Image (cartoon, rainbow, N blue to C red; front, side, top):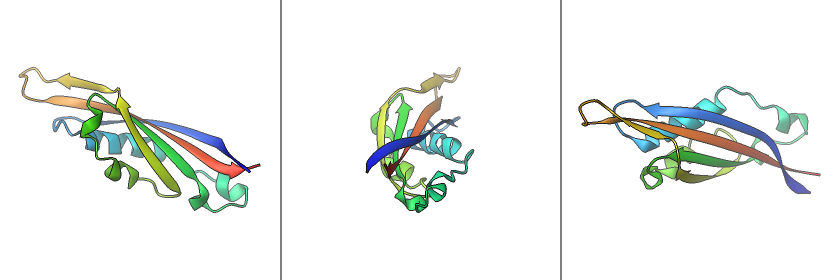
Length: 113
């Protein structure tokens, strides 16, 4: 058998005032996942925990994301998190803060023939 990509879920998350890259990343992954209910594993006679999920997060400062907190969002399966440069940071008018926008992709794979 081989791992096959079954689903690609995408989402966006923000931290409006706190400049918290992890919070924006977690919200982006939740946005991607919480709009779906995947029945593909059950339809194939597999347990939902058989899913392998590759999470990609895009934020302006990748080193400021706690990947363990992002990974904890996954309700099923096992996963990995990779954070890359992307998303946006929009400074406020006073120059004292910013809004962080993160993008997320969750690539779901199953080991099927």
